[in-house]
Amino acid sequence: MKKKMIRRILLSFTVLFILQTAGFIQAQAEESSPLWWWKKEKVNEQLPPLKGGDESEVRELSPVSNVILQQQYPDLVFLKGPDNVNRVALTFDDGPDPEFTPQILDVLKEYNVPGTFFLMGARATAYPDLVRRVAEEGHEVGNHTYWHPDLVEEADVDILVEEVNRTEDRLAEILGFRTSLFRAPYGFLYEELVEELGNLNYNVIAWDVDSLDWQKITEEEIANNVLSQVQPGSIILMHDGGGPGADRTETVDSLRIIIPDLLEQGFEFVPVSELLNIPATR
Image (tube, rainbow, N blue to C red):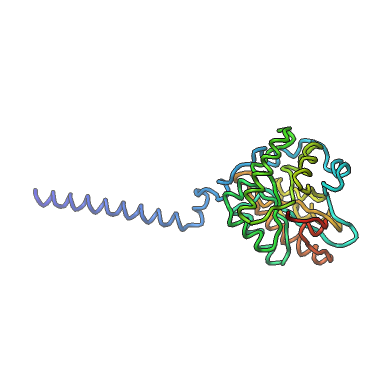
């Protein structure tokens, strides 16, 4: 009787040990397995959101055209630079993004090409080291508001001022200087907002080449959108960030098509302030 009891106790401990060991092995395998990635939260799902909504949800709206605003305010609103020199500017919106901004910076470093990054204040606050890396590697920094609202929908100059000043102060705390470059979320502005940006000593940077990388398209399509439109003096719009969970892998990969092709054509990449011959800081 006693022997049976002892065997049962030993058997119970053996089974328990095997189950615990198996659980540990499974946990270790899950952590190291390449198939485990889908159970983990993607890094940029923690990004502060775009207050005005995802680019694809908003860009179909039709506020005042930037072409009209440029004609009305030629010393404040810029779509492109001079067309008599083979120079272009790469610009990136909605960062810094902890997943994709470093990848884009790596590609730019590989080709020794500068860019201009229009940063959100909320994301700069979340990732100050990335902001510093952008500047330290020779790229320009611009103001892209704090929360990325649709300024036309908000229709309130005070909201613009608050968004711009808050972002300006945060970037200055991180970098030690104040940018003079501004890009509106979605590129949406109207006359009163442009005039207020002038009062705040900003130049408004729009674009003449839209990569459409905010759409769900391949790197080849993104590259074709750029290469089919680009001209001397072009300002090229791309994105290193987006809504939480947005994937900018195609943007990163498209740069490995766009940059070599334009270099082979004899184009020089410059920061947007150099392209436009305007100050980058105040």
